[in-house]
Structure formats: structure tokens, C-alpha cells
Length: 253
Image (cartoon, rainbow, N blue to C red; front, side, top):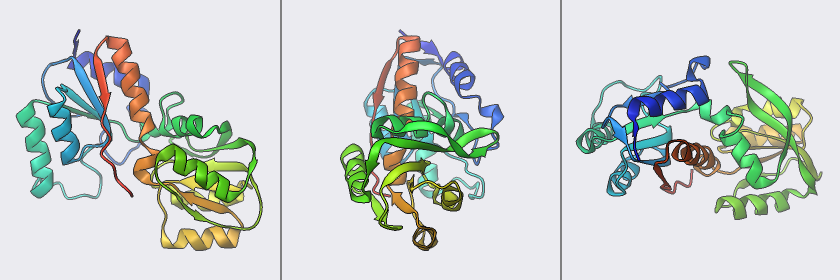
């Protein structure tokens, strides 16, 4: 079976509501390819390797979390940017990308999908973007030591997190936001949670954690954001009766 590119994009937009967001990039169709889709490949970032592997896998469209045309970047298409765009056009491969709308989605969102894999019970949020819950808050099934939570992350994500100790306390309540969300650590401390989990870490994050008495875990931008696009791809494949394959291009950051 196949679905038209137009119908596919319309379904994505209906699910993720990109018009509700003031994002750092365009959401939805970024590069137009062939008019009908029989297979989608999903991945975290539309890097050169993912494009090559998607084309080799017979994809008609590439569905990603990190696409192109970010605010603040040069609009000039040269170097590796030129090679990426050229590869998409040569293969007649569509690029469809959703950033913040995928982070916060109540079913397919990166934050919700990560919580399910870690066994976190969501009970609210501590920060919203455009009215949508961006930094979630919740609890573990039972309190654990920092080292135990770090080990659970390593087993689940396939790479060890960087764990910053903010005291000797157990972790019961925590806040989390996938990707580059270390800047919300002060909101997490103010919310009274025991730990904050994100993807990346900055130099000042270490001091903020230690001086706020808050454990911090940096589990990897890529590693924490692999699951939303997979869930969305699986849903769309079932919705339209088309094929879906997730291709992971490992990234330690």
C-alpha cells in the first residue's frame, strides 16, 4: 500500500499541531520528494549517514526529530549541508521533521516515551512552552540511589549517563526533559524534586546541581530522543498500512 505525501503530512500535522508552537525550525515537510509513500524510515537526526541508509532501505520519506533550517544558522547551503540536500533530491526522498511538537506530545513525545521505558509515573510538569508541558515531573515506583538510577539509564539507553551528585539523598521525585534541556535545572530545584534528568550538560550545570542539592543526570541528547520518532513512525505505518523502519545512527553526545 501507499499513501500520498500530502495525506501523510496532513496526518502528521493533525497529530502534532505544529502551528501551536513557536519553534526554532520549520516543522513538517522540509524537503519534498516523490508524491507517494510506501515506506518511511525514522531516525533522530537527518545526517548524511541516515539519508544514505534510508535510501538504501528503500524509503520514500525520512521522518526525523532534528531536521534542517534552524534559527540562527547560516542560510547558505554549502559543504555538508549541500551534500545532504543534494542526496535527498537525487533520491527523490522527502524529509519530514518535528522538533518541539514531538518533544511534548502526550502519546508519541520524547518525554513520555522515555518515561515509559524508565518506569516513571508522570504527575505534572514544571515548565511549559507555548502552553505545552515541556519539562515533566513524576516519581519512581520506589526510591533509589543515584547510582542505581544511573545504572538503569545505562541499561535502557545503551550508554552510561554522566551523574552529578547533589547530596546523599535517595531519588523518589524527579523532573526530566530530553535533549538539550540542562538549562531548566533551576526550575527543577525550585520544584523540590530529588533529581533532574536531561540529555546534555554544561559547565555551570554541575555547580547548579551541587549547590542546589539536586542530583543531575545527563543521559545523552541523542540517546534520550530516540523513542518519540519511533513511536510516531510505528503509528503512521499502522494508520496507512505502509512499511516503517527505525535506523539508529549512534551519537555519544
